[in-house]
Image (cartoon, rainbow, N blue to C red):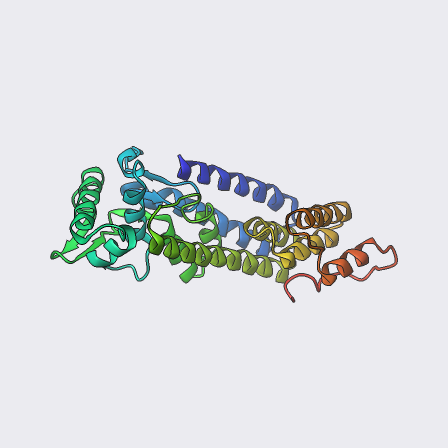
Length: 302
């Protein structure tokens, strides 16, 4: 269900983008940005259909080519953790059994840990098919990535290729959101690190797309991506200033002030903090009726 939900969310974003597009005057920059979105949507829908699809960005979901869910994989946390690690861990290669034992069964003696790993692999092979999991001798285990598509690996490929729109289409939320494996400290450390890495990449992509649109003079497009950045990291005060400034430059002073008030109220309640002096200076400039100079300095120049 998670992947389907993620696709619907981003179709909603694409619909809003289309509305914004239709409201803009024709320009090469406008048409180029919309083409990028439509191509990324095609990639998301078409690429994984011929193989098993594992979605672990946001809500977890695993489905076969016939859209069948693999409930036995999701039923046991360490089973899912093993598959997610094999799919997403870098470098994407084979992993030794000893590494996997230390990662997921550190509290068991070697005999029982190996038995637990064998059982997990047996269930995964039974659910996914014999050829998805690949072994090389008795010592190492990996995945055949031509038979199993994973949104994390697709996200990383898109980022490496500079396809920022596609990467953000794939980013459905935090890696393995809400997922926890008790008694597996090393796995939790790996997961925390990967969550931070992927989230930072997504934020960078949104920021760069906002920069690109702003350089083209496409302030509506810049605002869409700046808002996406703020969704990714609501506590990023620079992102708050960027959205506030863009709203003001687009003539929506009331929305700019409302966003500032909501942010100031939230950080006061959650962190007992006040907005930074730079934010207060920007708001003062917006409130001042004699300040007619365009306020672009609070966007990508910080």
